[in-house]
Length: 508
Image (cartoon, rainbow, N blue to C red):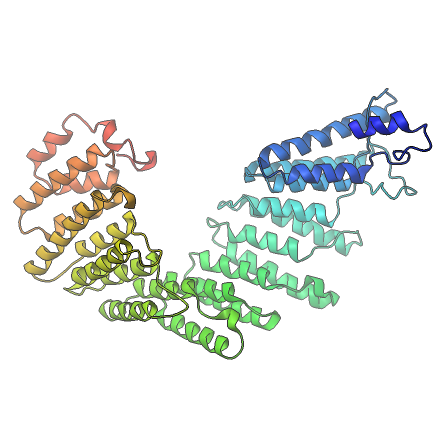
């Protein structure tokens, strides 16, 4: 507005540098783009962009109706709407951002049809009109993809826009789906965890992309590695029994279309890990090593790759054999030059021992715990123990089978780990899961009922004082103490303060 006024004030002076330099639609779009990227407050930037656009729409409407309008009037066009949609797609409140983007698209379509802002001036290069274009629809699809909506509602909106783009393109409109719009829609489906066929929908879009590229002989529609990775991720997140094999199949498709990257292989490794497919993990790990040794260093196995392999072992049915494999592999990692194990690595191996059924599993898990603590205390590496590491170890102790001596030793180690955690606030205070794991260890490993009751009461009191009693902890306690003890604690109900630090949905 200030620029506009200065131009007007000096326009009669032919020597002025401002003559012919009035702000135009490109100027205003630049201002809107600047607000859209206002990093200090993204939401405030989006609100500001919307306010500028609505202000200009209102002025143009009044001008068309023949009303007097003061100040700067710039006829809105599709570029300005794209700037506003982009701002909301980037906004921190993604659900609201997508809804605003959808609303702006509807406004643009209505204005284009109604002609409320005047018709397009074909002689003015700055008047690009109000018809939604490829960028408009791609930005709206991206806005819905960013919602990270597990319900699938966002994905359906994104799918509708992609279908619209393809139909318009086939009808000869100046709109063409591209890898950005396809990939964003695939991502939206990949995030729809509650939809059983979400991964199938994502792969169907990938296949449509491949076929459309071949049909139209258009390389700009050829799937990229980013597109393929989004489909692999969708299958890796799927709960279907065949999810891992489907992720592997998409990787093979990707190899036919373009060159997979480390993320492609790691995503398939993740899918194997979730199913506990050790043999498949080992085959893919070996393949990655061979590719990197034969001239493709970008797919050299990374820490994520190795951790996925350890997770596969922890979820497999190999039990003792799997735990020994994982322990041996962890030692190899500790001696590697390019990769060092992190907290996830040690946690995965502790989980392996927890499921091993080995009478010495508590001791083996304890050796790992002590190695982690020793590294932290000596400042070796970046590993920092946390509450979950202690909880996993206590869980390994709780699952100890074998004779009375083995269970007694396991309980002793679990109690010691719990005390160590309490004395180390930098690792986090015990939470409901940690208390529950310790109470399970007491129930399974105590020498007799009297010892179990005494220890359960002591731990339950600490849990209640910490406000960490959830429904699992309460049931575990009440189920494993005598009626006289049970009545002592809950005869008058469960005090709210016992659960004040537990999420509401998990409270008794």
